[in-house]
Length: 187
Image (cartoon, rainbow, N blue to C red):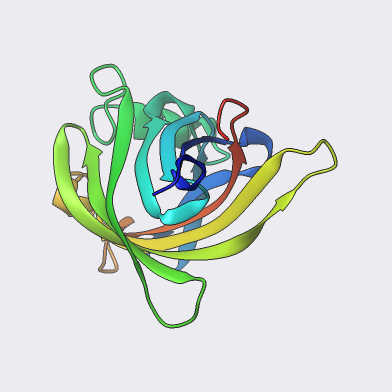
């Protein structure tokens, strides 16, 4: 192999202004409550610009949860849910990215750790494309979706309703729009 053919390791950072790490959960069994984590960090490396080679670690700061309701945010930060005093981060470590169906569709397998409990998960990823912005920064876009059961992480708090059913649904739908920025020290 020629020296010019050696592939370089590329570091990517989350473009915070153009990314959203969201979720939604059924409330009263009739509507969805949405929320986001506003403070997210990541270590993402690829070989060249090939995301199928990605090494991924994403850290969501639990104290940054926002559901557009301060009382609910406070409850989610409490020991009933994320226990932010003792568990500062939710961590996802990507293990394998497999292409499925069309060119831009993938399944991302990894481990999601919440409150110290690590559970394997599978997320659906759509590669939305890559381009340079007006400031000549290389960007890559992804849509990420998945479903998890909060009980898998022992997040069991709930209230039974008089009319039957529960206050908070078990299924959590993950919905993220992620824009990555190629770091200048990458070639």
